[in-house]
Image (tube, rainbow, N blue to C red; front, side, top):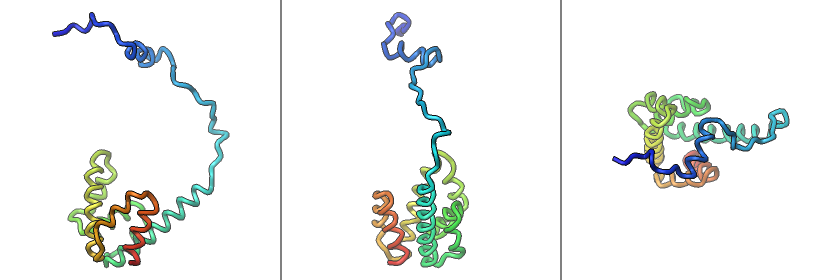
Length: 150
């Protein structure tokens, strides 16, 4: 066994110990107060337009899949549920709940991708279209539009 008490401390450890013990504040403080930050209505309008567009496209996709209650696409958590229903998942309520639990949601996202693959097959489109999701906004918009109207 090596006795670590005889080893000299490394500079990284000696510099970090006062910070960990809160004896010295080495984190620079910013001189920004929240009173000076003004909300930008353009960002809110952009999010609202994006939400409406993607909800509309989702609604059209679910209608083409002949899913009951396709209007669930307009409500955030129910939109996730109806996505699993359209993908013919066995337990859509369970997977919707698991989407909101940290770490477990990674598995639920994989099941969501499987649901989208089944949706593509239902609409007789190639599942390789999912690779369009790599392009953040435009790819997803093209994917949804193609499934909704293509």
